[in-house]
Image (tube, rainbow, N blue to C red):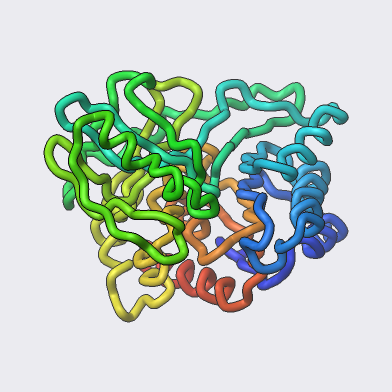
Length: 332
């Protein structure tokens, strides 16, 4: 097969085709839709349950190494009920992690205020019972002092130095109503400016004074072991298999598929999936992504020498993902 294929289809039906046609994948990596009215094709609670049932069917019949699954709410309840009642799959020890977005920092104390996203909000990896697969977190060292730019994220000294928002963004707007961000800044003696934003039911912080800092968009991968916390910047930097030449391809107008990934406001960038692919699969693996989106995981898979099959409900996004893979393959 080709190194990558993205199907413009609905996984709620496509999983049957994969099973009946005898497809076999080494890895399944999926952020299962867990909130109503967020994604086309998964608008209702019934749709969400159909999505998780499709993923379960694929794990049972089409995956032979590991599955890395993010889900929450009713989707997690459904998945965990299935997991408890079967004997083929088990949780990989020390595989749990969450995705956080850093908001603010006090420079004088290096205490932070972070929030959780609705994407990749609670993640676990699973292996076949009787195997000894683990998650090799050491494969990803983070983006530090890279040749072209880079950043040194000021990771706190201890988990106790991080306060976590009670609200997940972007769905939950209660953080604005409760002035949660303002209260954290006040507690740490940081002055700020704010502006009322229509539709957010409250004021948004637009600036802070010393010793405060507002973090640029990025993410922190947070496993159970604090020593393994890793920051993933929003911007794509050259590190590992992502060379300077590859980074430059994302900014060329002749590569509209890659440009779309680089300019997207979505935190789940190619850099994030570069981490995910390195730590949750091996070179040469065939990866199945049932919710492919615009193709960030697809491109990261190709860069890291994996084969990739994605399924995306939105036909335009599926075409964009296929185009991005074709563009990046030309320079590898």
